[in-house]
Image (cartoon, rainbow, N blue to C red; front, side, top):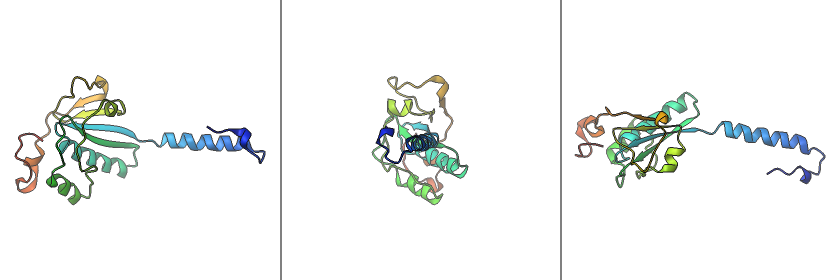
Length: 152
């Protein structure tokens, strides 16, 4: 922390005020996290987070989305990363990530995409929404690319 007695130029108060203003500005600019969770953390949540982040950035909003999975796949399918890249979006991490309690507690809103959070991972009811009617991503890709899995 700032120690005014270390100042030698006789202006410790002014520097302390500037320092506190910088810290408060940085804290105000921290981004609020929105968590998208799907079963495998490899398609629906990844696409939702990428699109959300694009829209938030375009609008200058202080939000960021992260994607997680309840039972993460080993990797994000090429059809997802290529589809996002074609739209000018980045899939983020190339490896799906397991949703954690820390992810949930650190998020302003948790959106599940047709999956249930494990009982050990609880989120406040007011901050959780389930979007059940999200279609299978791979069926929606041009040419039927992607996995043969019935849900993604």
